[in-house]
Image 1 (tube, rainbow, N blue to C red):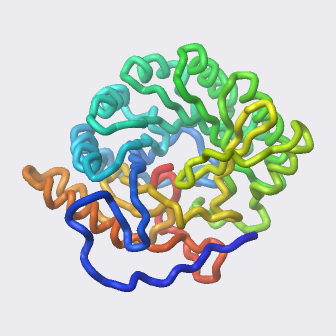
Image 2 (cartoon, rainbow, N blue to C red):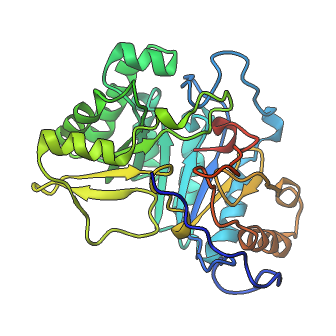
Length: 347
């Protein structure tokens, strides 16, 4: 496996810029905002949550929709143009279409999407579409019912499949399947998921298993790498070629079959993309994070609950991005997992 390229530390400890786009000390411009609206979930994927005993933030500590919109209004003029609504499971948040409606009309929002496990999608897809949502990411690791139950500790595969088909019928512009790939478990699903997605004209993005479970179940020998998956897909469908016009800042590296169908790989472990990262994260309880794996975060909830603090909020956003590290260093001895589990950070 390749390791993260090591960059020198920033030469200057100067303060963050007070104008211009959101820039860090390594020259990365940030335009992608991930907003978690809840840390609760209705499944229990073993690589994300414990089966029992998960600790959730008090509902009173979660950002309200007006607070989320206020944050977005502050961040958008700084160069943010993509917003992803995540969780936990965002469809558990009551009246989520109201938030979608408010965000979708904000000036500067070029791309608004929701990432969901799909369990509640069949009954909510139309309301989300009517609110202005046009992009969906649906998490689905397997089409095998028993393997789904083993991974999620729930028997909800049929509900997820119904949700995907409902979204296809409604006519969302973009639907993608996100699948975590785990060696010794999901190898049989690589080909079947691509076949399933091709039949529906939607894209699959395979995600390498990352150390985010909080239960210390991750190990390097359980990572099914992008190269492993490309080899399996090539054997079944023919050669895969890298997409020539791909966005270098996108987390997924896209490949294309001869028939034009594309598949993506988020290879955080074997091919770290930290040097091109353009993402900023806001947790459901109002913590701002410059990286999924960050060991520090900034509490901005007090500013969002204080009138007339927009300039201070902008300064905190700029400062947080300015402090961003070079990358997570998963492949180095110095790596330490984040203090929060994945469901608490936001996908």
